[in-house]
Image (cartoon, rainbow, N blue to C red; front, top):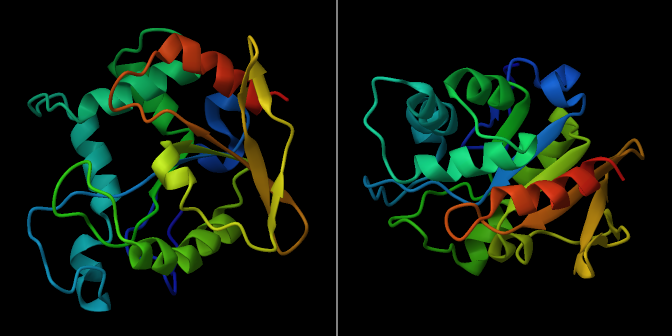
Length: 213
């Protein structure tokens, strides 16, 4: 599914089975925070770079799937998260099937110069229009946010509302929704970032309750 966007610089990676829900039977969007790029372009995110850099997200994912690519630590983030969706150890074939069922999008529309670095307030603010555009075009039913730093920087304007907390053994996880222009709702929750200290079997319980509430 190829789209033209007014505000989106880093295009999402849209799984080939996303529109019909894939193996989950639901349109699920996974929301990361940012890309890391060593180029350090002073005008990162400018339209002049879009042809070259717009497919950054898809290219990262294809590297993850490529059996000939040497293992890199960042790949473990994707592996742990995908296992929390299906609650079992994944192999290469299942991994591809999972991600082909999802839409993956990084929120910030400028790349960070180092890994695990946050954007500034302006970066988060400037990404809002692109984020809303993605929601309206791809219409996910559920969004799973990687990390609470990003969650705390997401917009919460007039289209935002709160859902009942997800309750896991007395631990409450807040979640909410964005209302699209036609009145339909996009449910959204934050999870611990899968990059470190992430127990995929525990987070499966949270995600399962969220997706099936």
